[in-house]
Amino acid sequence: MRAADRISMLALAAAAGDDAGLEDARMMAFVNHWELIVILVVVLLLFGHRLPGMARSLGSGITEFKRGLKGEDAKGGDAPPPANPPVERPRQDGSQR
Image 1: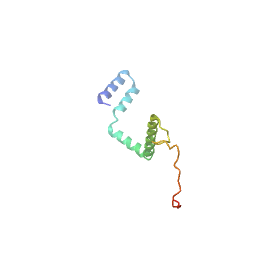
Image 2: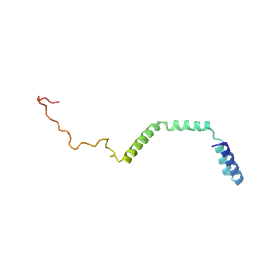
Image 3: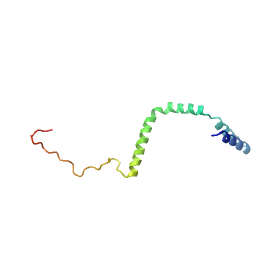
Image 4: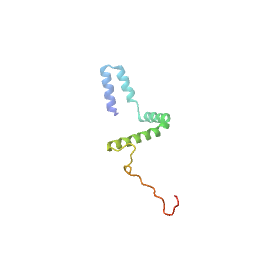
């Protein structure tokens, strides 16, 4: 938020006589980038061990969504399964594989 926006919020809250709004505007006005960095570090310390799992599930969800848009089967790969599976033939020399 720009300084001009903060000042206008303070002026509007003061003009309306809203003490709660004025207090909220002051609190927002004094949150700087260092405080945001500290908050981010605390959140990472608390929830850092869960982030890789969340990222994996998000990636698989996006992949499933894209497959659904294409109309592919959830289990199916790129090629459909063959209609007749290959038959294993005995070897000419009589030995087994």
